[in-house]
Length: 216
Image (tube, rainbow, N blue to C red; front, top):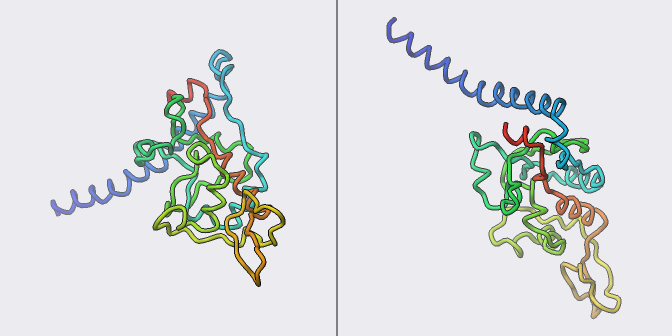
């Protein structure tokens, strides 16, 4: 009987600690953010550009969702106690400008859905717009991931591209050129691909926030 009591206490702690760390603490922080924004002093927020929202990238967000990108990529820089995201180069934003930080609830203001993601088979995309600034890189990567990143497990999204005859010069956006019966055809991004890449290039969730929120 005496040995059973410590065992039951350990079992209770095993359930209690994750509940406190994963539910109670984040919930308390979220409430603190809401309170700070609602009652922040003018001097604290006048130079802030937070939150900005990305409602102008709705079309790209739809393509992102339709192609299941959120299954393999997250858009959430976890606080240090929950992971090592802040230690990964470029993941949490612009270190050189002192803006690198974890994701905040208001980063998703202006977006209909918060694509936090399911798992990380690929890198987090919260600040991919800072890490990779070339649209052509994204087009090549979407069309043939392993040509750009050796060993990539990302599927090729060839459905986002269209093939057309080459007229004059090959397009600068062409990701491939093929010969068919002696004629050249180029593979170029469709409107959906352009919308998705625009969405990725706009992925910058490290904007300046009020000091009171940063301090939390």
